[in-house]
Length: 287
Length: 115
Image (cartoon, rainbow over all chains, first blue to last red; front, side, top):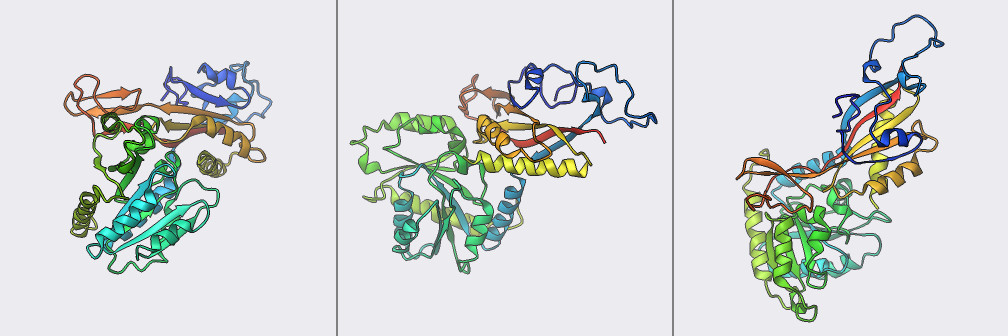
């Protein structure tokens, strides 16, 4: 924080500003004086008193600074924690599946459910701006599916998930797969209460997607290179893609698979079963 | 374009705080936005100008401090700022698993009428 005026701006930090008077603050000069903020103002004279010490900024001495430090998404974060508590108490593994549109989320989820078979009882919540096409596709796998239509909203939020979960029978459920809206930017900001973020990078997406969308890839617990059957047609550079994923998400577990041919799917499903074992035996009150 | 809803949340919180403080006018709102938050400051500015007219923050200044990505290198026992978001320590090359700053979406402070 700025030592001079308490305005929250470390000196030298580039700021983006708008509105009247921004040219005054753009250089981070201190027209307003911290020493006047917050004192008692117990003078009994009227408001026609001359405040000669601020001739360059009339009215500035009438202001006060409110120090807030509020998380802007505090409400979503709180609801996400509530979801997380609900899922943990029931021993449900929850994964939030994210990618750009067309990277193969729906196909992968459908094939994952088929291959898991009776190993994990699975349900799906799927978000799209419009249509229930994905829900209809996913129901062919036999799992219960709830479609969320977000309208114009480009991501899922924790309260949408909470409402969708109410439509599911969660008794005995092992795995909840949340297919987020196809978008590599906005969903990164919203915790849904998941255990794991799974980010897909299809071989058609380009090897540098992780470098172009670092917020999304940084938060990935798992990165899946999908549509591996198309790698030659797309001239996919495997080493470059892996290196880029490692730069941004060094901690992420990496899978390469094709939901179409089934290559790599067994490793992915075994991983989910192991993750579920860990969740099932976890102390719900452990952080 | 989730910046509109994020700006609406921030403005809602700011107006509530101004009301609690008994202030009729908001002169400036300050945000801290991490470079790994997934939020674009320019889009927040655009949203701010669109949603403040008719509120106590009409004509107010929006100041956004961008918070760089700062990782902790456990091997070197020091923090480093990553301009390109790479998690590897520039000195030892070991990837960091600990992001210490850069995901902020924070309403940090505001200037209101003195009451």
